[in-house]
Length: 317
Ligand code: GLV
Ligand code: MG
Image (cartoon, rainbow, N blue to C red):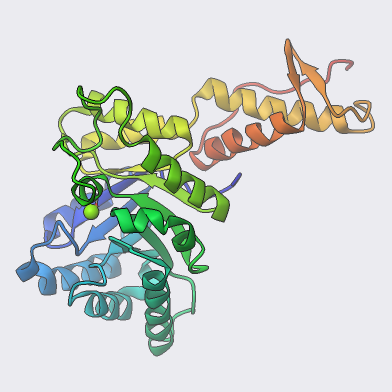
């Protein structure tokens, strides 16, 4: 998991609103997802599909990852969403996000449909990835097989609002801690998703925080999942983007330190450095496990575009 495309902030944009679609192009999120699901009223879905196809084909998204969230398989819309969006703008699309994934079969069904639509439209087969939203009790108990269901899986995404409804949680504050619970009620869920994502080698993405004007509260929630190892989080408002980009990247100090560990360990294990399996970096002992931790932080920093502000000097030179 050292190198990957950065997904620190994933901006939700309702497909039904052409003005928001246009505005999103100029924002600094790592990813956008154009929503045909819950932010799009049933009567607005046919027009939203057309808006989304037009917005993708118009371009102007820079190097953002471009995803479209289709409707889940229990609705009457999923098939048409995929056929219209991928058929109309498949070459301009990186991922399809599938909400409320219940089991591996639902991912496989999307994979098969994508393959047909890619073939029918002369697109490269298998290029479009799948982002699987885990937002029901059933999805969570099947998360491990969902993670391994298709080579197209790129992320597992926590959907806290639907999840809270799915387990009858007695709260309306999505993602926030609750005074009646002496801990983090989401810890178990986040860890299950993270373990499945890491075992499969894909990214783990935290879901939305709905109090969009309260950026400090967003930061508090984001810091918790970032600390566990999550790679990014949804943002629902431009004001949340900078916070997510900063929180899911390592600090400059940690990034510099990680790069130093990599250089120092590389040198220590070399002929010139004495072929040592463990070594000192200042007052810190480093070994192969330190290298692995440093690779994670350095990978996140490089993906976020950080630059080093220090360099390694071998002790004897
Ligand atoms: C997102 O889809 C959520 O349900 O939180
Ligand atoms: Mg949801």
